[in-house]
Length: 402
Image (cartoon, rainbow, N blue to C red; front, side):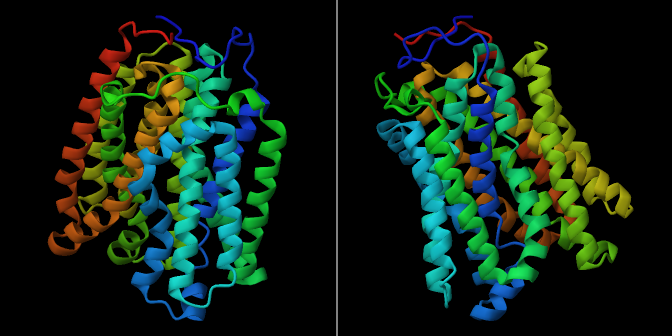
């Protein structure tokens, strides 16, 4: 297969990938994901102090994802215009400044606006980071590096969940938010100092046309469907454990944290398997496990069976998400289209993440949890079908960057 070198890097790629630099880019994504989930563990305190309803608190938590669902693709073109490295630094700085501003919030409107601004920064980070990783990594390492990148959300949310409770109790919710803002600003400085300027320059090739984004669009559709039917399983798991199995809120939260981190294992497994030469289409078939797992989860069995089903679905969420990121360079017409391609992926994933929980809540509330089984089955089968098409496309030689 033609390696399709990046158009704006004239010399041959290094013999070894700069893993330390890639790790810094990954850390930037993790810090952004910590900011994404920072209100989950301190939500009750925020609601009590600012007089927020449960619905308003939900908007505060999900506003960041909502921005991505609207501006993902335009942000991809913006990243292409100003460069990946500068966009990453600007995104981290925006998150930090908006986070600091939210410390002074005294009402819902102020906090929601601050979270909306954070959402703009978050989108810039989530588009520029994988594009940077793709350009920095040697060809044989790209699949591994991008599959590791795909674990940034569960890792960041896990850190936010585990650290937020203790830090929120010790510092208050404003102190916790300020701590995350400071950490994000520090990460922006580190990124600015450490990242090579050549990786952040404006893309030299032509702007991708709609036709050239067709296959990334198919990949984005698979990602949207995956997020739509897997993320709500984890989001609504505490409610299921409390209502159906009588678990305490603390126990349900702890179990859900462990279940969510299984997605990291799924993402890392993709990198290992791709490095061993397993094809994208073969890996996509693992998504079929979501269907029996959904039946085990929602068929009304024991709590251990429900946790087993949720664990499989969480792992598949990480596995399929990592497969999407790893497959993107295989379906791009040119590697320097990665910024816009990642914009399409980011918007689709955010849309699925935003719509999934309320859809699941509506179905479960009206028809009961077992009614979610066919919903998950249809979405999973459609996602696997799209990934199988991607696998066939990835097996064909594609044009090189001129």
